[in-house]
Length: 120
Length: 114
Image 1 (tube, rainbow over the protein chains, first blue to last red):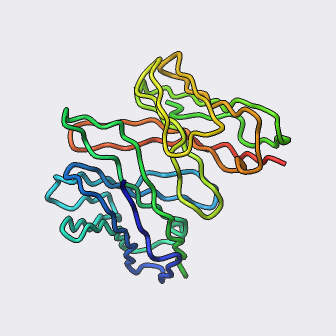
Image 2 (spheres, one colour):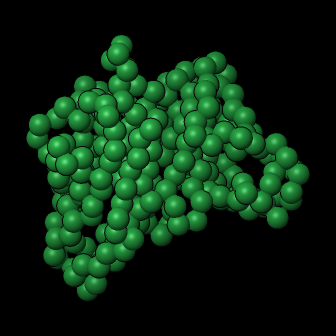
């Protein structure tokens, strides 16, 4: 079974600084996907970034980058130049592995989340 | 594009009552999902569907049922509501292309069972 671990219940960062949110995962499979979602206090789930397990380059989306270390089974989210609007809960998630036929049902397993607070 | 829409936004149920949570997507996605989020926790998969007429159980299916008669709609049925079903329910649909993919989430339905 897959498992996602986010060890930081809460993180604080000063506005304009960078912050890293940790995520480790456990799987014996080679083909899988990793996601980060943001959940502000309003409750919606906002997709931030995706990394496929075979992608050699770290994914980037604007101020978000995913530090993917496959051997360590970690997929940390780096937010550069933090803004007050970045204050939210952040979830790491892993998509189930691709099967022998090369397909996946796309089922996601989520971590417990990290609450990020950005101070002015 | 409205994306993924859910109704209602909030509902209070008495123990033993039943209800249907509605979910609709206008992106023509085959894959759709229902998750629940308990307070302070991550999301857990209840049911999923890979296309009209095809559904399967996720991690926490007990107490729920789903159907998928069209590509657009994926309703979640709660029978005999229990306090343990107090949660926020999210519907999602999947999009992927080559080496990229995502799941688009609806705004959620907050359910309180008393």
